[in-house]
Amino acid sequence: MQRRREIASSPQRTAGEAWQVLAELVAVTLERSPSIDRSTVDTTMAAAEGAGRMLIGGGHLESSPLVVVAGQLWLEITTISGDGALTLAENLNPVPGAATADSWMVHLPAPGPLSKIVKGVAKTADHLSSDEPVAPASSKEQSKASVLNTDALATWAEEKP
Amino acid sequence: MSTTTTTTMHTRTHTATYLSDVIMGTIGDVLALLGIDTSRFVNEWDQDQSAIAAWINEGSLKEVVLECHRPNGTVKPVFEFPIVYSTGDGAGTGFLNSRAAWARYQAKITSVPSETGYSLFCAFFGAHSPQPGWNSGKRASTDGLRSSSFGNLAEGPHARADMRYLS
Image (cartoon, rainbow over all chains, first blue to last red; front, side, top):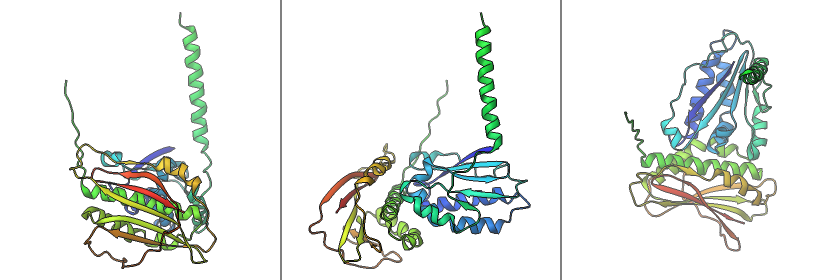
């Protein structure tokens, strides 16, 4: 189940404030699972806070999402800065899809200059990773379905007089 | 036919938040790029960002300066972030940044030896409010350093931040 959320950063919020909003979104999403302990999520997000500020302040999280993988949920979170941040209609409600998850991982992007720092931070918590997340099987199936639909459409088009 | 108009109010606080965030983000990129320990920078991020924003908001901040202190005592490179304030009310101007150009510019920045440290300075046009964690200090001389202008790093309705690289 792929989901996306956008969070307003500056000038709506500072990078530090935007990270707090992001961390809370991750926490309220994951705590829906009875197998996931909220305090573990909070501790994990706190461990990533410093790198998170740098990712947001440097604008890196605008183009490279933070990805939360929890059971069937694949959640991509990006930030928006500038004029777009002031008009963004945010959805900060818990993201559906993680209620039955018993394992989870927060994948931090490791762009150019911050690569070494992010990789170092990812080693400090069990649920943090700087690796590219592996796409869920469901998304591959959706991709195949999309190809089939395209094929069907092409066939239908050829049959038209 | 109906017409809907959306009006977004840009305040000086928005400009201050935006510029301070871009400056802090750029300094973070520089430190990471040069392999300088960022633990103190990260720990003091909120305090420093808040101070820079407050000084931009009151119009007192002249520039933010990042000095890289090498183990042999020399200070280079140096990054200067001068603030240029607009005289108008800022109406009709949005928020822009040059992060893409900054990403390309990073190839020009020369490396520093391990154990290189850093200092942050702020210079002012005159009177300014006290901010937690900031005390008076003395900048290192930039004599002998070659200055290169990056140009406009970020701008908002009420001010912009430029960047100079001295090496």
